[in-house]
Image 1 (cartoon, one colour):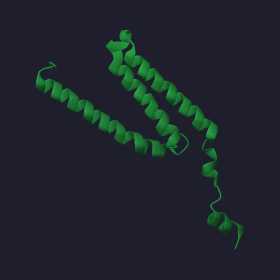
Image 2: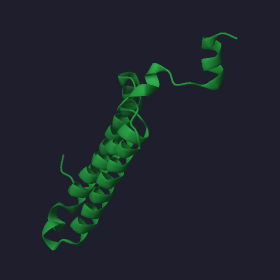
Image 3: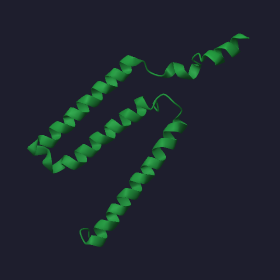
Image 4: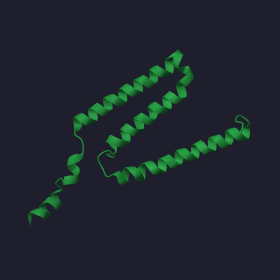
Length: 113
């Protein structure tokens, strides 16, 4: 059996796997996610931030989602095609939800168009 066949059978790493992060990177990302979660909880209980509570929580949730998708789903280190295949339908779904919200607000009379 030649060396190439042995590497394939054993499952040795190929060059594409060399760019993935090691354990310390995941620990740093987990710490950042923990800090963002603690900040979300603090924002919820801060009376002065109640005016902008929902937009701020949405922004924090988006930041957490980007971190999880980029590092734990390895989108940050893979081809941009995979990121586009993941983000395009997500953006399309967000656009549809936003459009439906506008439509229902307009039909209910809460939004004057």
